Image (tube, rainbow, N blue to C red; front, side, top):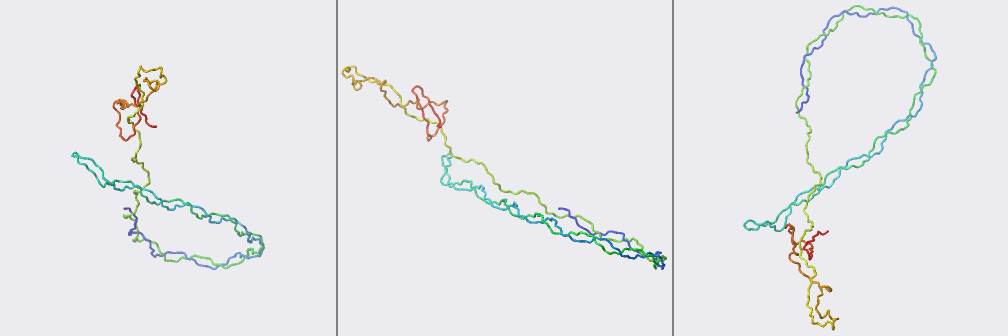
Amino acid sequence: DIQIPAWKQIWKPVWKEIQVPAWKEIQVPDWKKIWKPIWVPIKVPAWKEIQVPAWKQIWKPVWKEIQVPDWKEVQVPAWKQYWYPEWIKIGVPGEKYLGKDHDGWEYTSHDLWKKKLVWKSGWKKIWKTEQKQIWRTDKKLEWKSAWKQIWHSAKKQVWVEDKKLGWKEAWKQIWRTEKKQIWVPEKKLDWKAAWVQIWKPSKKLVWVPDKKLEWKEAWKQIWVPDWKEIWLPAWKKIWKPVWISEWFPSPDHHDHHHHHHEEIEHGWDRKDGTSPKVLFKRSEAETAQPKTVDGQLPKVSANITPAVVKTDNTENKSDFRFPS
């Protein structure tokens, strides 16, 4: 509610001037005929140099308003496509195992629903700047023809004033006393209508600040699950060749001097120095399964490719390396 001005009529006493009649002695004029000498003005002819006007054409510069083309930046409406996220429900087909209770009953679920984030498009109105040709007012200097008044000398016959003494009948004013009715101002109390300004309540429409919810395009970083291939250590049993020494029997009754060139084919002798024999031997239990450090070997799954294990004759030691 606000207070607005209004006018209210009131009556207030004022003193009003009125005229009342009265008699006053005044001097009224009267005329008496007399003769008096006067100078009578007469006109005598004479020549006088005067300036007479003439017109001369001149050219003067003036500014003329012209319209010149120009470019103005204006805002024109356009539509822009934007994307906003929305959650939708999609069905998960099949059966899902939920687990067992303490009595051994198994529980499964059917026709599950899950939420999926999809992007929907929308259009919003934007303003883009464009160039629009307009006409603006400019000034151009032009020459305009004009006429200028000039003055040149000329001779003109004039009449010169002169004086001549003569007698003239005249009337002389005299004053005589008479009575005249006059109106004397006096004051009279009267009521006069007047307007006084008052204030009355009224309603005025004002604008108060408020907030409006709008959608703003932004980017949010989210984390989604994915599969990554990593390498884990494991133990694999392998077979490797080792060198072993064996003794073969050789009969002493064989004749060496007759068949010295067939000694390799028919006799028995140790051949571990000249022609070694390669045998494949399975590694021992302690070499196949190396000892873990402080019992902290992690459990690995069966579908992971195991690493390579190398075993020496002197010491059972694992040489594991991740692939580069």
